[in-house]
Image (cartoon, rainbow, N blue to C red; front, side):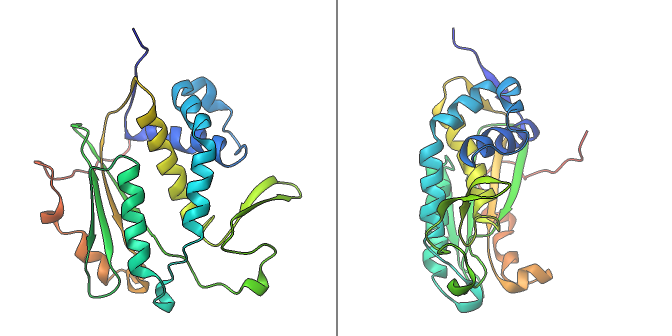
Length: 221
């Protein structure tokens, strides 16, 4: 009988940080601990390493920039596709009074719901200021760090989001790994949202949530 690993939302986020970051991003600090704590996730993340890096590189190659109204519709569609590929049953592009948002849901039949907020766009860039072409996401040596991936969005915020998606792909690919939470992701990038108002309100409407229960939040134990 196959070993089974059941991860709640907190354990999954820890595994995502340790295992997927370690496998995808060339040995993140502390990632080695995931081998002992989450061996199934770690093994699956390592198996999907090349695909995870390619997924991030392809995403970086599409620069969606809200401040320039550049590729925003394309960026929303791309993010919706990434969510579906990672296992979200539904990913809806939501019109707003600004740039489109994306509302994705993954119902695992769990009692608790994990809500995440992503951004699918990046800041402006001047290629002349970069040591490596910002849209090529090259893997280059960096003194003191080793091999790093350089590209617009690699840190803010496509890289961290791609790490989370890599963990979902890893969990989906391995028999015996169960996610003991359901997920909701709201994806929006609008300058006004960072000031606390604007288009984000359009993707927070309870009517958009297809679960038969309202999402709940809880304080850390």
